[in-house]
Image (cartoon, rainbow, N blue to C red; front, side, top):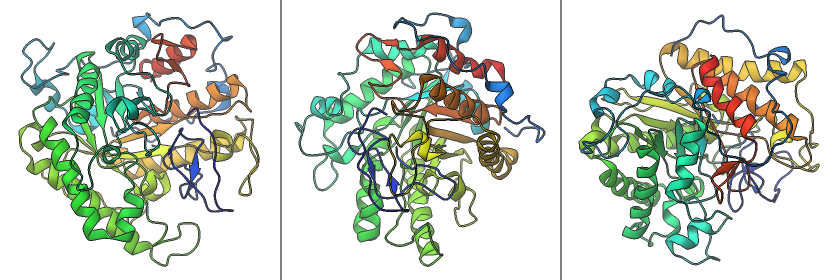
Length: 443
């Protein structure tokens, strides 16, 4: 994300988009596998080919082209045209029940390739005007319009993840202002009206410190936030997905970079939060009783997702997917200059690089998709002007391919300063975007 870095710690750091995206480093999220939290993430034949340099060397975009709209519908991700607005919308292209009949594995597969509306409704701080527009524009985004959202659909994206920091404008008791909830509903409606899926979460709401400091108070606040969100969206069709949280872990309880002291306690707290999320949504009625839900892994790390201590919630509807983020190697994806914990990389594509990439996604496949549990890579991206555009595009294409060919949905992290020019509603590198969304048709 277009950003600036604030790097804490020596070998232990954590990455959180608190200000201006993935290049704003705070306290804890490069996992043992190199995943960067907050800045990743059916059954399939286990004989899937590895992503290799030879197979992907042509995936980088052509020469940089001037910003133009993408109109080539043949490059669109394949997505079933199902109801995508209000459940009661009789003008939608297909009845809600059609999507509801999908398993969650089928639902995730039908998303194709996705993108985040980052650094927008997830902004935090008290330095900007504490209004809906003040938050929406605080980190550089213009006010979102219907035309901007339509541009994502025209490019072929099948799902938009809508990160939301609810507590930024809420009062001390967690009461969300009606005007903020109305605005989120409006933008979500535009996404769904364009026959895309929409994922709404709780993003930078500070759960990693709130739960570690005072679990009882935090769980009451968390419950209240989700009660309000679940109530507002309970009658929406099944193209809307809710996500339990973003990048959350408790480094004050367990140091994930050394030893196991406190690990069980940290995972126990985390698993309880996810269970509470499912219980709240399911009990809210309407379509929430059967809505597809996205469950965040501990620090959204692929390694932690595959840890035996991470336990998926009990769900009477059995309609859950797992959320991970992927920013590996972090020295390439995040750093623009050398730091105490690593040397900034500017290259990608060695045999060791592909071995690491395939090992991470094979592990997720073995633990989840081979067992019929879908995985969504809710964020991935490679940022910084210290590496070439070709290197960045190659990495992004390789990760998206690795995920999609294993029946996972890759959702690119994007802000107003990255791939999509929101002011003109066009992509800065349309040839690359066509290739990226085309992955859904190639696999």
